[in-house]
Image 1 (spheres, rainbow, N blue to C red):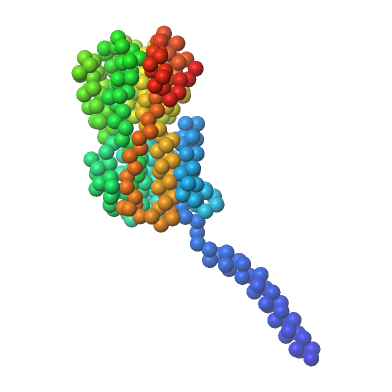
Image 2 (tube, rainbow, N blue to C red):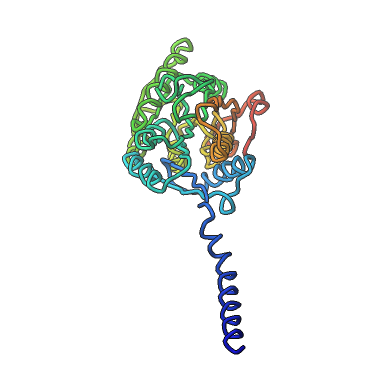
Length: 331
């Protein structure tokens, strides 16, 4: 009898231990949380906070929440485009389910070069077909799709600048040579729009903070009527706004981040909207959608933002017609 009781007690103890171990075993067998890799050529700062909120909203629209059912690995190049390839390779080693390459064609190509079969969602301002990223907008093919900021806003932005400064004749164009595709399209579009209007253009290159300083030193000597800033990194927005104000050179910028930082005027696609759309596509891919079946989205939301404080400081009167057109006038 004693032997029976002992064996029974041992069995119950063993059974209890096994039962306690079952939840642990079941937990260990749960599939790992899917990972979204976010590849960004800039650095995390106040301007990116709104964009990241929009990106996460896009994920939520697709039924995903960071930290709950999806993880996000952030890789910031800190404005060093030479780091993008290595950062993209890190996301591949991290076994990202999808890589979201924001901020232009350079991050997109860096991801494409190393991703293999991993899906990529891009955001670009140039035609992705001409860039060679996709076969068509409707059926991109391969493992890439994304957001095309196809606003054709260059000529319109120059027209708005002329409306603000009707006496302007000499326009300096400031571009970032690190983004060759952007430079070529921006310069050609500005010059094509300037010629019929009788405007003279002068192109200067600047990538680094020191080069931006040097460009504005040139503007101080040559005194252009205005500066048309191409797609420079928003990390330079405060520097550009301060230099423009210091040298009293009116400037127009491609995104609202610059006007928020004190730039005179911005007109261009809404980057927050593009990030939201990119988040939605990344979420759908995590849920099982194929990039080839997701058409490239042509983002059409444009924003005109005028900084009236800066205008007053520069002695510029903002016409009522422009105020009426503006999405926001910063007073």
